[in-house]
Image 1 (tube, one colour):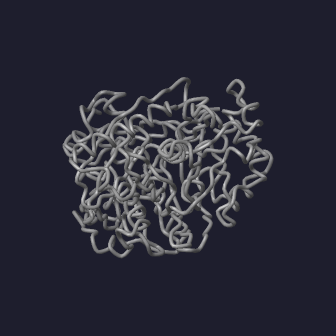
Image 2 (spheres, rainbow, N blue to C red):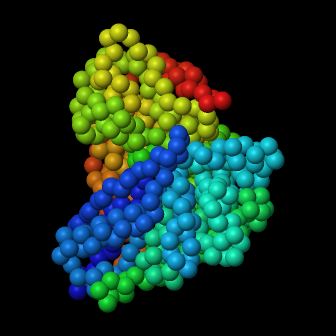
Length: 493
């Protein structure tokens, strides 16, 4: 009988289900977008029940499309948008509020209060993170303090918290399993990544009962079972989307790095079993837990990447689809005087400015939409260079090539510009769905379908982009980018 792995990829704008065969080939994929809610300025929410239904719906459709029987599915791997916060009543199974998305900025004032208490060093040393509204901790605190009756329910041990993986797992196991993996726990700003436990000091500071928090397990692990048409399928792998992509790119060795161009842009470098702290604004995070070992990574987070292209399409309505951006950007053959800094949700690494906002610089009377499109694509590459510069300083490793994946990695113009501005090779694999593959591999390894070395054997390169820009031009363009970034900082008082 044939054997298959299902990967559930629950992202910021859509849910996807994918079926992978024993050879590591994607044989069916289904995707469903869901609604984004913006109740107030800089607030971003999702409906947790819509997330669940979209995930279950794509799963059903994908199995039908692949024409396989559930009995042939040997394991499920879950990968998810990280930091997004869901709180639900464990008795009714109903969320008490919408999911507060990682991009949401409503808790900036709570973060300032934590900084005023001098907790920056404790947060960095314990969690590997910086104090920022990006992470789950202050979002949980906001829900408990602002949703009617939430605090009383929490005090009576009736509430559960989870990142999206935990919410899916709890529902897929009919409320039997309340757990997460090391990679997702490390993104909450509540987890001690060295001692591998929830940090009581931070829980007390934010008045979060420990009873709300999930158990933390390895990333490749039998979490529980999903019943489908009388078949019992093990849920055998969980990892946050960026860590799953690092695993899917086979960055198993210290110093290997990848960049994912998704809604945001995320660069991770494997630092092995050593916990290394950044001196330059990067995060220290858990990459994964496997074979009784914890692997760590340095991470740089760019909040707005693919969502900037979505902005061109939906906000400005100057492109019809993402693919069109490549054609129009290539039409500008001379040096582009326009710079777009897409700090729509503040600036992430290495700046960490919650109060920065997006801006366009260099407009003249002859500026057209194509200049704006090209500058928006270029901003993804510039932000990646910002992170790579400090990652090399922190790690002492000079990268000669960068492994790339995610939707925007399919854009040849962007990948060539990325190689040019980095002065490094950009290596795009044949399968750019490395987040999905990472989740599938973690599950497949757990159920004995694959071994870790199989991933390296299967990895094939689609294109290797070589730098072709002069050093003088590279420095001049990057200098202008840095000047533009400086002018967006601290825009909100």
